[in-house]
Length: 107
Image: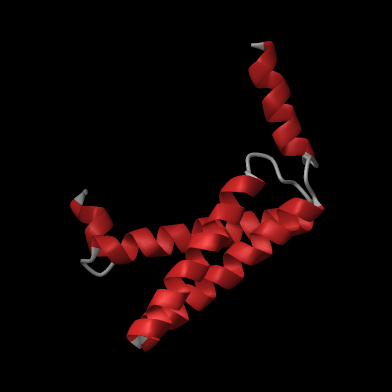
C-alpha cells in the first residue's frame, strides 16, 4: 500500500479499508434511494450477506464481545436496507447507468 494512503488513514491500512468500504456503502444506499437505481447490485449477494451478518451477530453475542456485536448490528442494518431497496427498485436503472450501458454495448 502506498505511503500516502497509509498516512491519510492514520497509519492503519485496515482503517483506510473500512473507511472506503463505508463510503462505498453510503454512496450506494443514497444512489439507490434517490435515483431508484439498482444497476449492478445483486439481490442474491446482499441477501446472502444479510444471512452471514446474522450468523456473525449471533457469534458476537455468544462470545460476549460488545464492540463486535455493535459492528455487526450496524452491518446488518446497512445490508438489510440495501436488500430492501434493491427488492423494491429491482430492474430500475437511472439515466446515467443506462447511458453507460448503451455506450458500452454499442462500442
